[in-house]
Amino acid sequence: MHGGSLRKPQRDKGAAGRFADLPEPVRPALGEPYGILVTGVGGTGVVTIGALLGMAAHLEGKGAPCST
Figure 1 (cartoon, rainbow, N blue to C red):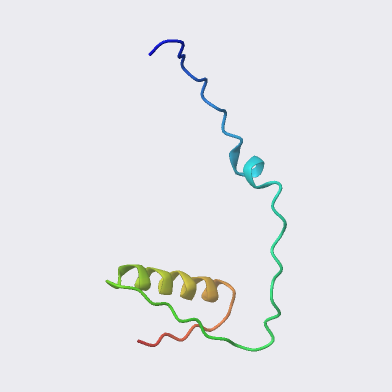
Figure 2: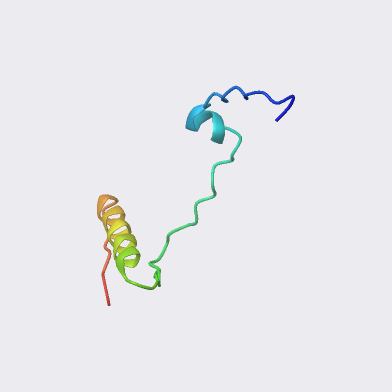
């Protein structure tokens, strides 16, 4: 290769620098309960997402019934 050179590595701005321009999301009003349906193939990811959502609800002091 002729005329080529190594590029200097770009400095990582960190999470704050990369996402500083993003607006805060609008949170919906949660006046009443709602359901979430998680689907997938194999089961491992579905079980993990269910556990994460259940723990998040628990930490917020909300109920999270599980049905299979």
